[in-house]
Length: 322
Image (cartoon, one colour):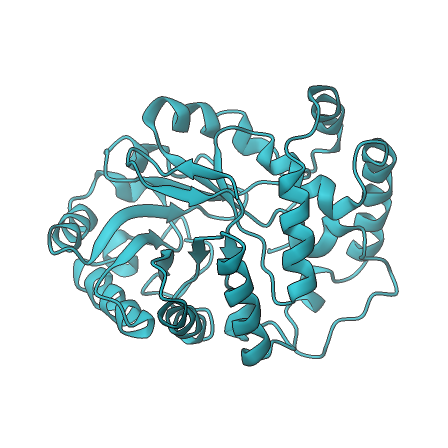
């Protein structure tokens, strides 16, 4: 497993990380705890040490599974979690205030709740689950960050940046208190590479790339006949004519990548790791077959400069989360 330095620290995290939203069950239909723990164990065996969870993933269920498997493994993992906004909104509204969203007592209370779920004394990386950069100038969140770090309960701090708003974090990054930004980055959503990545290189801030497969759109497996279980949130994500839209675009991408890659999924992952600024990419992996496929893709390394240049034409300015 390729390991990369995290932020300004000497710590190393795996280039392929493990996104733990799906194993929390909430919104994802079909997750099974025993299967989830089996995949988590296999990931650890294969050298993955970076696991990204959140308090709201199944109301702590995902955190508990990760904590259980870590204890069983006997290995010390690099675990990241997230504090939800007190308003429970995604993304953060431009009208929301810091006092409403992340007051000091809320930051501390939710961090301690995550620690109980993880059965740990500290979390390696705690992230604000949403953010509005106008909050950066206020002291209250900074005081909470510094307090929890001084007490040893949080080792590093980060921001899970609002969907498709890659610059809505720059001012927070300038404070020196933020060690990582988690952003959507994939073949469709390439905007972070324009301005955010250079800023992070200059300031030694890690990039955690989420949604590398665009919730499945970049696997090549979504088409108008695709059916999701009743209650699965993807029924809304791929509503109306969106399945046809992604099918047409995925077909065009495949025509460009098929001479260099074996599948759309491989191309999607290798695209993300082709950018040196990316410290870890965190696909969700509820099945062992998906973990094995992702490991194989990452081991093949970056795409060629020629193909990366060709893939620029596939940028797609859309937000299916809205």
